[in-house]
Structure formats: C-alpha cells, structure tokens
Length: 126
Image 1: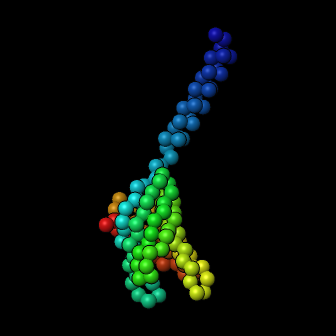
Image 2 (image 1 turned 30 degrees about the horizontal axis):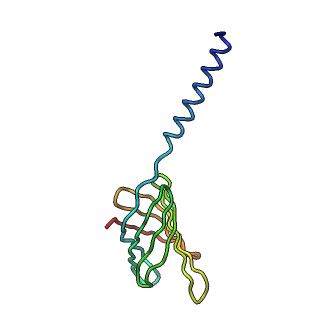
Image 3 (image 1 turned 180 degrees about the horizontal axis):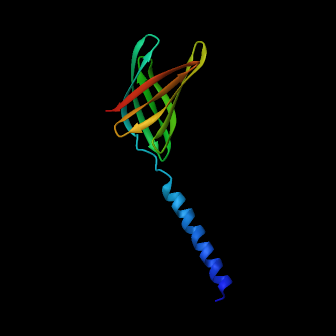
C-alpha cells in the first residue's frame, strides 16, 4: 500500500472515531416518566398539581391534574433540560403555560411562563 493510501485510511479512521465520540458525548434524556407533584406560587396563592408523564426517548406526553381537572400536556427532555407545555381552552381563548427547568434525580425545578408572567416552579417525584 502506498503512503498516500495509508494516509487516507488514517484520516478516515480519525473521522469515524470523532463521529462516534460526538454521538457518545450527547447526553441521554433524563428519565422523567411517572407521577410528579408540581408546585408554584400562582396569582391566587400556592398551586399544586399532579403531573403524570409518559416518556418515549426525548418526547413527553401525559396529563396535569389539579383544581381544573385533567389537562393534556406535551414536552421534551434533552439531557437534564425539560420543557412541559400545557394548553387550555378558556372562555377568553387559548391559555398556554410553559414549564422549563432541569431534572435532578427525583426533583425538578425551573421557570413557568404564562402570558407575560414568569414564576418559579418545583416538582418532586411521587
């Protein structure tokens, strides 16, 4: 084999190893499936709901159960970063809540955005 051919094979091998290393370095989604007690300070005082999450890879679906009954949710998990979206139809139109935060074992915390308001939230696994 010529030195040019050996050089090409070496470059190809390095490229393949780099590709494999990047794929292995990407963090696997945290496991958030199950029931969670979610809490935040709402306009009318403390609010507590139960999240029931189903997880397929990085995708979430499930329900949020609270004073207003059960509401479907959707979301994603990227590594330890979680996003949960709750959409409700109200007499005043569609109302969306977006929970963004991080997972740390059996707890989550982050920021809830609803309309122009942003507040902190926490959740613990039940």
